[in-house]
Image (cartoon, rainbow, N blue to C red; front, side, top):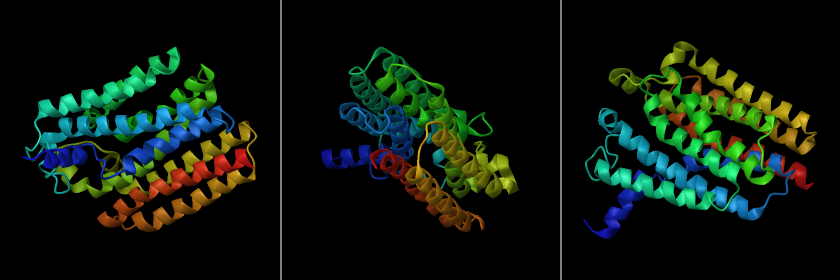
Length: 286
């Protein structure tokens, strides 16, 4: 195998060719940083977090494929992933995940002690999430904690503390993650039922669409309340209003439970997260 072919396999394993995961991790991190700094962040810290997002999402994907390699071969969408297909060994995957995590930790070492301490929690969440699908009825909630932990870390990096508002934002992200990852899980529901993996799409059953919409409502409701607590203005609430419109569009996609439409709704959550951030940034800027 040539070096180019090997690098292409690493790219696929880390999902660098599919940036949606990094974006879903980045947006709530930026929400936290902008709220923590009233729209005036330390740009060096922003870049550290942005790079950390890519590194840790990549490490998380590697660990996920390592943990799910025996399951992935039974799922049409995942049977050709590098570890499952035998192109990359499990030992090699663990070394790659360790290297990516080490690079992320070297970035965090530039920040204060509290942020460094929280980074160990973030690492544990990222490493343990793939295994929750074996015993948690709604592992998507755990994913929401893992994908939203950049929020308290962003507050810690700028303020040296984590105020209550950070945990409310994390809660909003948990509901958002349950919503979008249930849409994702609806794509693989039939395969997951066969192999015994637990997902929210299976747990919610015929109430899956209702549960998704309620989680979206909780997300936007908490974000609206947080905005009210810190006296945000029209631009912020305008962003939430546009996000509500996006949620309604997602309903039109998922109500028939057609696989490709559900996957399209999942991918479209990048716009929801981006619109919330754009409204927040504009509100502070203008």
